[in-house]
Length: 336
Figure 1 (cartoon, helix red, strand yellow):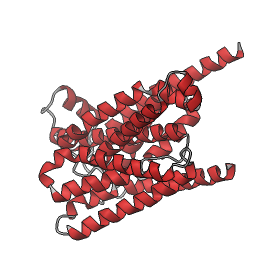
Figure 2 (tube, rainbow, N blue to C red; figure 1 turned 90 degrees about the vertical axis):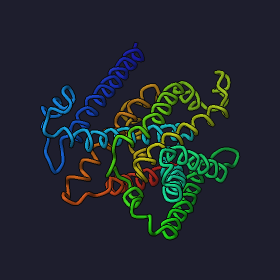
Figure 3 (cartoon, rainbow, N blue to C red; figure 1 turned 30 degrees about the vertical axis):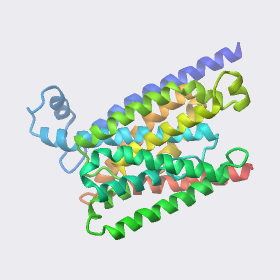
């Protein structure tokens, strides 16, 4: 009886969190469109949606702020899901696409394509995916010793991220005449985002999000250990490979439009796990929603708090995420 009541309460908490995430996402998107040097009222936003072209601020809404807000939401959801997958696979709350080097690999490949072959920018997400997969393979190879050691994984990720970061620095030196267009991208931000950016990230986001949600049962099975998962009919090695590929795809698509935006995949899944529990049926969609909310709100703060100067979103996330990571690392080492 008590267990049934507990399950009902947990279900209420999860549904409430999911509904709250949807409401906050709508509000944050409205805030992202309304806030700025030119203030836009909610009625103007509504009129621009239902009657395009008939408001004075239509051009600002549709060409500048709406695609930027959508890009921020998709990037935040993708990074949060990527971190959630990696934490589930490794059973390690320190796992994050930025910390273990996946974002750096994606960033180096994307930056190389933008500098060497700028006419092929539509292939930036695919190039970033190849870079992310290569980085993930290297990190897992270095961290594997009769299983993936969590601390070894973090150390290998730091080393790989530093190596790829050196590669990006080298590119900035060799292509110093072209680097100006990628400076804000390297810091992480959405300045200059337009509908072409939305079209670039959207298909990869849909593929990654749908694929991840389809694998939530197998992620739950992996939490029980490989032996138990195999008895439940889960091919653990193939499942891990698919999930790592999905995590890399999600991180790469976010990097392709947002640049090196860190710590979203670390903070959001951890906080959501404290609220809704470790069941990935609820954890994945809640992480995606609140990841989108976090990045949209951070983007609004980045371009309004110090107006007219626009601060890259990556700086905001670093100030928030670095202390949080140190807290988790200290607590993790204290438990070992």
